[in-house]
Every structure is written in structure tokens, then in C-alpha cells.
Image (cartoon, rainbow, N blue to C red; front, side, top):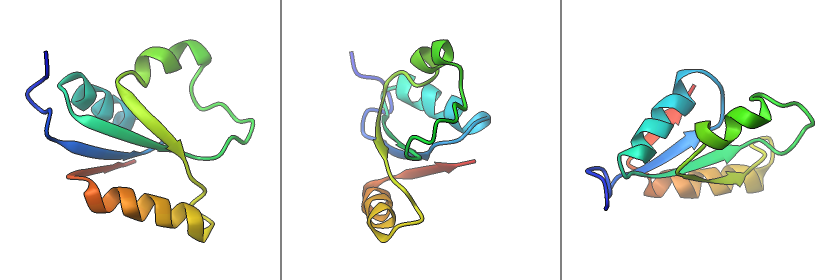
Length: 87
């Protein structure tokens, strides 16, 4: 059963703190949430067991915002989003 926010598009720039929690709640309520992750650097922000439930209900893409291709990806996603979450 779709949630009350089924027509809402959210773009989340990956981070820690209240941003991922807000995105998780919006996804739980039916919003289409896309999380932008930094490219793998070997540094884990969240413990592996936390990732499964903290990142539920979202799709994710990896983009390096220091490169023009990564910025273009994020700008294209932001152009279609109704909400931007950035910590």
C-alpha cells in the first residue's frame, strides 16, 4: 500500500545525523528518496549492521562532487526533486 507521500521526490546528500533519519522517515511514508553517496574511500561512517535499517527504502547513487561529472549527476537529480536534504 502506497504511503501518503508517494508523489514526493527527495534527494538526500549522504551524511550523518538528522539528515539520514529524516530521509528514512520520508521513505517510510512513501516518498521516493535517492541518496547520493561519496565514492568508497575505505572510511565507514555507519557500522555495517546500522546501514541496513538506517538506509531502508531508498535507492542510492555514488557521485564525486569534486568532479564535473559528479556535480552534473547531482544537479540533474536535484532538478527533478521536490526536497533536498543536506546535513
